Length: 589
Image 1 (cartoon, rainbow, N blue to C red):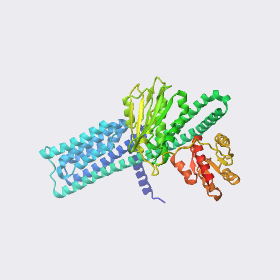
Image 2: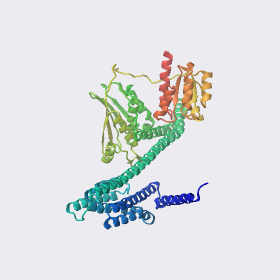
Image 3: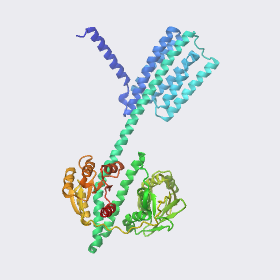
Image 4: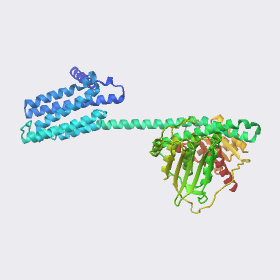
């Protein structure tokens, strides 16, 4: 059983502890943000610790050198520092911070003068400057400048007093000087360590907040990307299917302009979504590495022009591609990024050029470079807008005569990719004279240096091929089934991993399309991994269909065993290219 006296002492200590904690939080209730609360608490803590150090060390000094002009300032200073938290409660936080700093400077100046060279008071001044720079007292730039100026003025005042002996220093013995010196050093170092700890704690908290904010942003972009791509996937596929049906049925020709508009809008939205993802990757410092491979440049540029056919038709704009006959068709480079660059600039040119005009695309060769130029007949750009692009900043653009507004995001992404590809660009533009975007890239020619790599248009025939679509979205499943069926394939469907594996074992498909975002996390990977682990599907073409174009999601499906990926919204052109390459190799095998 606890002794009543011990219990009473414990209660007293608890009350003292609670009172001390409550006093530390004086004025915190006035704060409106966690940052303000933390700053008020830190200043209160600093003042109470300073008050304790001054009174403790000051009375220690008095026992060694009992001078009235030493102990009275110690008591006054100790009390003032101890009462500053009340200013946080009844006054303003800024006032409390200012009084704290100026009081430190006044006391440092006084004791620096009367103690002379016994104490390296310069250390305390260094502490003041450090505290100001680390924003311990304030984050107001003006206040910080004043604080640093006061610290320097204090240091100058002490040096002047030392030189002219305006205020005589204490006459101390060697032993007294030694004790004074080390006691003061202890107090000053305690304050410095305290500031470092508070600053380090705040920096750690800020870093954690930034990390959480970055993770939240990435998750937000992923979620929004997926949510947009799912309906966009259906719109793009429906418009593609309708366009094919209209071409094959003259009676539906009157619907062609509407379908073209639908496809163009969906394709433009896809580009915007991809640009948002690219911008997120740029901000995270995660631009993809360069993937240099052989590709047919002329055909790649032609494909981009074809992809924008509906947009040019709607404005009755003609794109003229002039390809230097000395320029090789097949080069080494990152086809995907070059496509992104050209597509973003071309979309911008189509968007702003005047109706019933032409856009000139020119490709020519120099000794070690190839040059791509895109010239439109739009309203042009102001020098400020050109400068913004060259500074790699996005900007707002307006073409009032065309009733068009934009953010310049596409050009911003393009310039980032140009730099990544070790290219350079120049913009020739002025208001009313159109814009010419000139880009030069390093010219790398394959060792074999083939003269041409032209192929005839793809004619994909899937008659005799069994395909399996593992997709949880019914509309996407229906559209893929219709598209693959129109190419002659026998199409089977499944909506989850277990159904997908069962159907694969039952029908032994030649081609399997697997959604990367099946109902459970990672089920797209698990489905591919399970199917690929069966030797019976060693030669089966597995195509991953991720819900977004994030590189980690694509790589995870490829690592699981997919032969290729076709992110949503699915481009039938891209899917046809993948299937065409498979059927050619499959027949050869």
